[in-house]
Each structure stands twice: as structure tokens, then as C-alpha cells.
Length: 602
Image (cartoon, rainbow, N blue to C red):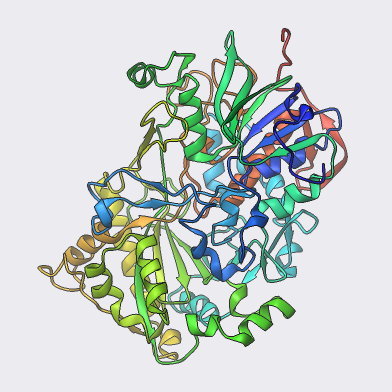
């Protein structure tokens, strides 16, 4: 249908083939692909509003501005014991999208698939059908890569709805790649089968504007009469009958509605929302549900295996005026350049280079990278007004004393940051219910740096970042490290390992990539919540299709892998294979054994 539905309308509340919960990076893809089948009635339920309600959303450089807004769930972690110690109350803000498009409206738009070894590892650990050769066609299916050098290879698509392009506005992007080469790292296509090395960032941007999943997948499908979209509809419970999911309840404007599922209920509420809804509905760890007084439907390790990418910033000042600077971004020319030509400083998120590297601490049999570097072509607080600076501090939760010590001199300086990212942590966290109120945020405890090895890998990454910033190519721009001493690490000799380990524990924070809380695995795996067909173990007619099913977090940003999961999940639900091994759409989708069972009693 051409507009968002009113949940009170009769057409919305009658029997649906697929009630789907969550219209984020995965949910928008699912709605499109499932509604391609004209015999299926698809209902997409989203707790947030339409993305069109929010101004400036299309402008890539405003990405950070949308955090802590109405379209952000604005989660907070529990106080951390080993990391993020300088943050207010030792709690880290976890932005998650709350509108049509979900977190693809809030993220920095990087398109990173991860390493082939990530997916081969999934398959080897029991997720049959999820090896790299199985998932690559689904990455290709959705992609329209505008880099002709890449799109001519067997690793990329050019006919999909998701536009991907290079994001390299400032000369610092080229400098980053050249710095990597200077240090002996090759320039590579990080989204091919050779991820190790350096590259300009690839991003989901089209004509200079954010290209979210709501634009790429959902809006084009909303003309279909068998797709119904309901916003401001907060799902509160999954209903079961004899271990079968038979529908969901949701609340809108104070009224509870119920919808029945003819085939399946599908959760795509993300790594926080999906486990929370499962536990509220009686699917989760028995001890925890007993503690909360929730009747048990089935005992599963929902909410465990929580993983995230942890990052640490380091910064350099420049004598050349080549970086992103707030005053430049607010100029009339910048606005004209973006609106008329779809280019310029407003057309980048600022993360213009990426690099992937192995660690000396990773297992000998691990071929995937454990360290990622992001080039952020701006300084924290650079060129900001007093008001902007205050908003920035509040969003990142760094108290004034620490912020002033580390970033206080940046206001009138240009520079860049290198963000060191820990790709594979040995630490594992959890999500639990705080109460039985579906509108109260759950307990989120990522347990950052609870394994000491994680800090050692981050230290190695910081040392690598310092080498990048000290290369000849960056010195051509007058790059000098900003050697501000953290006020809680003054007893350590600056630049010693002890100093940086202290700094890491104080400043390490999220890269916004929660995953793994409804882990995929084979039957009999005591740590698994869903099987390789994404069906919840021990139940019927219920699947989870989002980043929560990742057994182990991939080596890179999560938007692209989440979209892939939804593409492949859609085929599993429909019982078809829609692409060949090269990601090309099959004219007639091959039918396979369906992996859902229709209700035999309603």
C-alpha cells in the first residue's frame, strides 16, 4: 500500500501470513522480499515513526546528530568495571534506531561485509549453509556498487537496490591509504575475499545522501497491496499455543491490538529488542524468567553471547586546512554543493578510510583480522560552537574535566582521529529483563574488557595507529600527535604500555555493533537459540532474522552483514533460492523444501 497503515483498520488486524517485528536494517529487507510473493500477507510493525518525520536525516555528515533523539532507543549499558571508566557513571550510550529504517538511519553508513573466514567459522561451528560461498550471493544480490573497478569483479553487484559508493571527500582519505602502503600494507577491496589491508571507505550513500534500508527496500515495496506497515506500534508479546507462535500483541496510542499469524512470526528487532521480546514472551533462561515471574514457554540461552566492537580514539592536529570542520560544513557553499550536486563536505560521514590487520595475539589458526582502523577526518570538538560542544559532550557521556583535558584545545584546530577497533573480543556480555514492562529498557551489560587479552589487542592497535599518524604522507599535512595526558593516567610515563593500557580502560567505548544475543547453532548446541534456518529451537512458526543470530561477530561494521542475513533469511522463509552462486537473480526462483509450517489449527 502507498502509505503507512492505521493499526485500527480491519485490513491490518485480520490473519497475516507473516507478522514481522521491527523495521530496521533487517526488517525493511524482509518486508520487501516476503511481499514479492503475492500470496503472502505481510505486516511490518515498527515502534518508531516514519523516517520522513526527521529533518536532515539524509545528510551523511549529520549522522551523530540523530543520536539521543526521538528516533533513537537511547539505551544505556550497566556501569562497566573494566572499560569506559571515564564515562559518566561508567555507562555507555548505545544508540539504536527507532523509526522506519532503524539503525540504518543513525549509523555512519559504512559498508563492510567482514572476512570470508568469519562465515566459514559460522559453518564449521554448526551453522550449516552459512559459509562464505553460501552468503556471498546474498551480499551481491542487494548491492548496487558504483565503483566500476569493484562492480566488474565476482564479489560485487550492480543491479541491487542498495547503492554503495566510495566515501572519500578530504585528501586525508588518500593519505590514509598511502600511509598504509608506506607501512607495508596493501591497498585492497575490503569487501572481497582479501580483506586484510587498507581502503577508502565504502558507504551506503546515493547521490550524496544517506541510502538507508527504508529507502532501498521498504519504500519501493509499499505500493504492494499485500504489504502493510504500521508505525508507532510497539510489540509487547508473542502469543503461543502448544509451543507454536500464533501471533503478536502490540500497543499503539494506549490501545492493545492482536494479530494472528497464518504461517510464522518473524522477529527483526535487533540484538537488544529481539531477546527482550522473546524473554517477555516466556522464551529465555528458565532461572531468569522464574525470577521475573514470567511463565516459561521454552528454556533457551536468550540474551547471552552479547558481543560488540570496542574502539579507542587517538588524535592528530594538522597545519594544512584539509580536515572536516564545523564552520566549513555550515557554509552556504557547502549546503549548495550538497543540495545541487550531491557532493561536498556534507556528503561524507567523516569516516573516510578503513584498514584491517591481524594481531600477534590472535589464535594461530585464525585468518581473519582482529584489528580495524577507522580514519575519522575530523577532531572531537573541532570548530564547534559552545552549544554544539556541550551537546557533543552529553551524547558521548564524557565529563567536562576529562573532555577539557583531552579535547579542550581542539576548538580552533583542524586534525583527524584514528579509531582503533577490537574486532573479536574474548569478553562476552548479556541482556536481561529489568522488569516485565515491555516499555522499560532491559539490562545491557557488555562486560567490556573483562578478558585481559582484549586490552592487549587494543594496545597493539593503538601502537599501529600511532605509526600510521607518523608516516611521511601525513607529515606532508603537518600532522602532529595530540599528546594530551589523560587526567586519570598521570602516574604512568606517557606513551608507555602502562599509560596506554590505562587510557584504553578509561576511554574504550562502543562502535555501535551489538550482536549475538539469539545465537544461531545446530540442534543440541546448548548455547544456540535459533537453528541454521533461523527457527527458534524447540518452537514452531517463530524465527529471528537480525544481528542477534550471529554466532560470532564479523570482522567489520554490521549493517551489510545484517542486510545479508535478511536476504538469505527471506529465501529460507519462502522456501526458495533466488540467486545463483554469483549473486545473479534467477528468472524463476528454485523451490526448495519449505522451512516453515502453516498452522493446522487457528
